[in-house]
Length: 93
Length: 93
DNA sequence: AATCTATTTAGAAAATTTTCTAAATAGGAT
DNA sequence: ATCCTATTTAGAAAATTTTCTAAATAGATT
Image 1 (cartoon, rainbow over the protein chains, first blue to last red):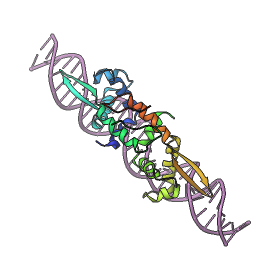
Image 2 (image 1 turned 90 degrees about the horizontal axis):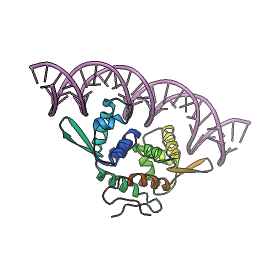
Image 3 (image 1 turned 180 degrees about the vertical axis):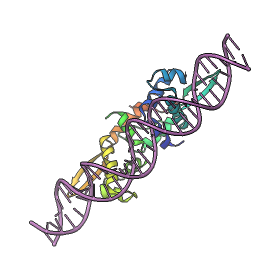
Image 4 (image 1 turned 120 degrees about the horizontal axis):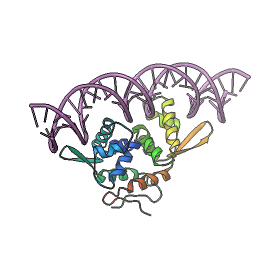
C-alpha cells in the first residue's frame, strides 16, 4: 500500500519482467519461473514482493497458484508522478 | 537513461523527498542537505543518483551547485506504466 | 598566498536486497 | 497410505546499496 512500496517493487528488473509477462494473462508460479534462470525459491520471493505491493494477486487451483496482474495500484504511482507535472503528462480523470 | 534507471532512482525515499523539495524551485546541495539528518557526503551520493537518472540537473554559481528538477524523464515512466493500461490511467498525447 | 565555505570523491562499514540450498507444506495421483 | 508435483519458507551466502569518515577539489574572501 502506498506508492513507496509500489515503486520499490517496480525497481527490480525481474519483477518488472514478471508484470509484463502477466499482461497476456494469468500464469502459475512455475510457468513464470521457467522464463528465468533462477530457482523457484527466488521467483517465489519476487512474487511475494509483487503481492505485498498489491501489483499481483493469486488464485489457487489444484496444487497450482495462479498469479494475475492488478493494475489498479499503478494509478497511485501515476498520481504521485503527476505532482511533478512534467510538460504534458498527467492522469486523466 | 531508460525507465530502469529512473525507477531505481525513484525507489529511495530520500531521493523522492529531494524531488518533492525541488518542486518549489532550485536549491543548493547544502540547502537540500540541511533537511535531512545525514552527512553532506550522503546527500551528494543521492544527488549523483538523481543526476545519473536525469531526474535533476545542476548549474554552478560561485562555489554553490544548484540542483533543479528535470521532469521530462518522468514521462518515460508514465509511458512504461501505461502499457498496463490500468482502468483509466494513460499518458495524454 | 592563506584561509574559509560548499561540495564531491574515495574507501570502508552498515544495512538491505537478492539469490541459493535444503527442508516444509499442500494437494492430487497411484 | 505413499508418492509426485507445485510452491513456499527458513536460513545462509552473495551482491548491491546506503551511509559514514576523512581527504580532496574548487572557488571566494581576506
